[in-house]
Image 1 (cartoon, rainbow, N blue to C red):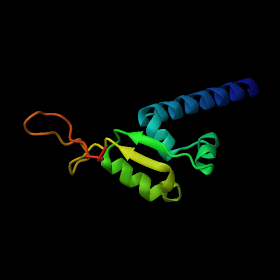
Image 2: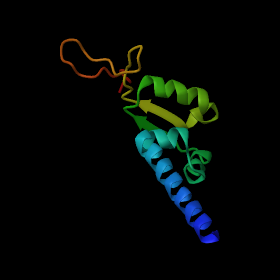
Image 3: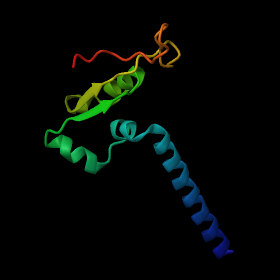
Image 4: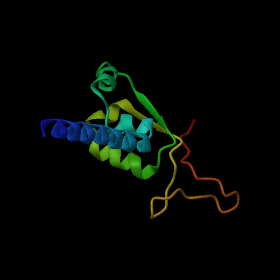
Length: 105
């Protein structure tokens, strides 16, 4: 009985870890650093490093600015994708290309 309990517990831990990894993979590495930074990722910011995020949706950036306000001075966004009211990327009517904010560079 004890072995079955331990085996079941181990399976639960492995499944939980796999699910967490899947969620992180779906976020993408930039969004993971933005929304779920590890202590190792926060250390360079504490020393003044700025992280440049490229190609994120404008709605995700707004979320980050609200949720990670204390880190704003360490964030720079380029190639921001403009979204519609549903959060989908807007496209140029003539070319069909995704619209990106002009970051002035």
